[in-house]
Length: 178
Ligand code: SF4
Image (cartoon, rainbow, N blue to C red; front, top):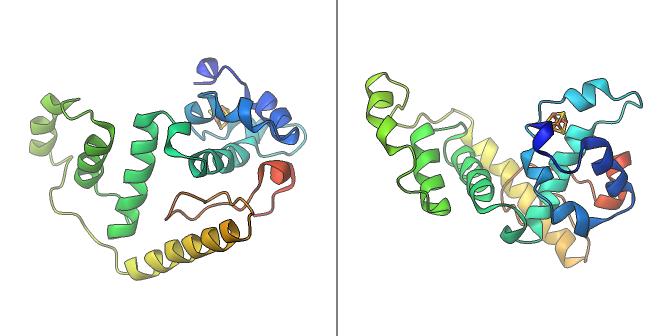
């Protein structure tokens, strides 16, 4: 996927240190990262670009859904909704929500019956025992986002309304703590 990224990881780090939001957020490279962590594992300076890119995506999403390609934003929000609802990923729920959000209603519909027959798409979502704790964590992130937004400070999870998010600001991404 790296070959598809017009801004490679080391350049993303340089732009982040320069707080060049416009360049970072106007390009699809952030959204093409697969979080394979190869760049983080190989970084000679022990920087963690994959983690920084993850935080940048949350920041970009916080600036509005238009920052991310529609399909990717739809998947992102649908994934988090599933985690909030059941504490784990329900494939059917994810697909349904993704299709509604992305508008790709008929995409891959032909493969669905075969997947159901093979048990790849369990129709009944399974809820984990600790789903309430997951929801509390997500709600806490949302409260923090609102507090920071009210104080005029951006938050990596802002706009996410749900996600456990890193708290890196663009200007501080190179020195984030975990
Ligand atoms: S984690 Fe790093 S190497 Fe992997 S896809 Fe993302 S930018 Fe590329």
